[in-house]
Length: 212
Image (cartoon, rainbow, N blue to C red; front, side, top):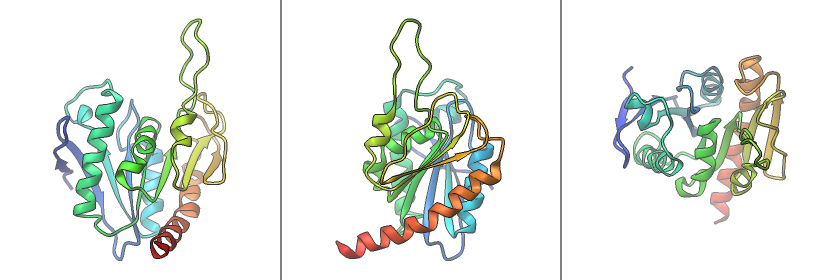
């Protein structure tokens, strides 16, 4: 199936939609900086979501569609992602609770835009918590990007991830699986963590909607 092309402020994005009968929710996933939507952990998360009756869309950012290897600046990534999610909310995923997510860079985009996209929850695969240190510079942390998310979140992190291990909180579940940042060692564990967490997201979203 050819991907759907969606115009964004920074060029066309490609969207690979995986529908499911009687969907109870929707999962939108973005890729990492150095790879595409065919990454093993994204495939595992997709299959897990489909099994739980979540429709799935995997998004190729415009810089990849244009054939560029280096990621676009963060504000361009965020604007393109938001445009695609808005399109999906008006078309394929209308009326469904939305879970935004991705691997590594894509997880960061999903976190930064969670409020703007109206995400009911966020799924992070291999969140790059601590960027590589620059020579002589102090250590840095991207924990504020995670802490800014106010909806339920699942972080699936390899036990040997060189970018560090995010802490769990009352709203942030951290599933530690075998492997490193690539999350290739045990894809069944990745899928299992997603399958265990996703159904509860819909229940919480439904209860929140009825209480408003």
